Image (cartoon, rainbow, N blue to C red; front, side):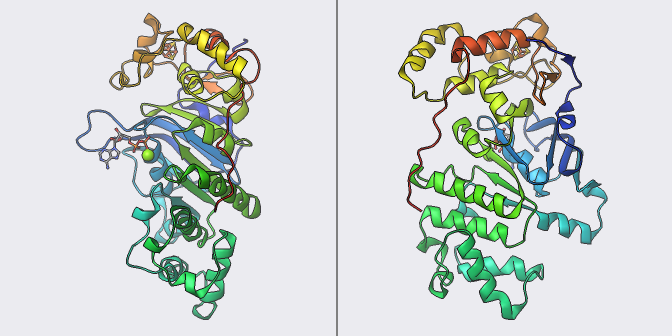
Length: 364
Ligand SMILES: Nc1ncnc2c1ncn2[C@@H]1O[C@H](COP(=O)(O)OP(=O)(O)O)[C@@H](O)[C@H]1O
Ligand code: SF4
Ligand SMILES: [Mg+2]
């Protein structure tokens, strides 16, 4: 593999086209009482209409990054820009526009929908507050919202409470609430993780369909690389580990030519439908002995975050690796890209890797 050479840490931001919708630059966040930062100098840029999937195991900082992109929490270091302007220097009017333009859909719609409010109140509140719709047009507006998320567009449905809905319906209501503000970007944080497999694909397809209709962008957060591949097949994947971005690139590049051992370990745990390939993978498991996931990373600032688990670790890894450009807007933070390529082949076999997407079932 030819490697043009290291680029600066966090330089992933230079890998996308100009004209960012939301850009976080060198963002760190340290929660009070925690011994390490939840995010450590992370940079990410999302352009209009782009799908950026953020994947990584629980606790690696995905939700913190998503909440910072929405302005729900402020970073302890670094800047957040919306349409080229730093959020910290915005006027109140501009902050309102930012808050309106970037909406979040949470993992647990039960927790994010007020149980004592009907859907009519929940869905109508933000649109009325932001004066998106006039009072006399509110009913039509709400019916249209329900139709857009494939829910029953009826007065009876609008008068229901969250506990009267199925999990899939509740998540559609959460999506409708985000849509009610005509956002430019939705941060979907584990938006399908709590749904039955039977409903997962239909909600993913709904989100993708809405993106086609409106041209909005997504930051799609998930711990599941299979779901991420399905959702962001035309987009970009950002792989996080222990508060830092360790790899990013076009989805197919990251899946078929992983540039970081952690991405290899995620791919290794995905099901493979082809029995011959599954056998090959089993035989080669020994070639890639990842230390179990209970072992976390080193303290911040003491070398590569993946070192305690990495089968390729060497003395040099006590220094934090910069993001290395692997070509084609693909970069990874590892000192040894050639060895990672060999590791990937030993785990996945040569050529493309067939990853089973979530099973498409029809229930809505
Ligand atoms: N409100 C909070 N207070 C203290 N620590 C937090 C808080 N939220 C998250 N953390 C910690 O920050 C780290 C990253 O959390 P999070 O962003 O939720 O990760 P993920 O979404 O990838 O599971 C974890 O170690 C978590 O325990
Ligand atoms: S820099 Fe070293 S420890 Fe980190 S991923 Fe690469 S080989 Fe492993
Ligand atoms: Mg989370």
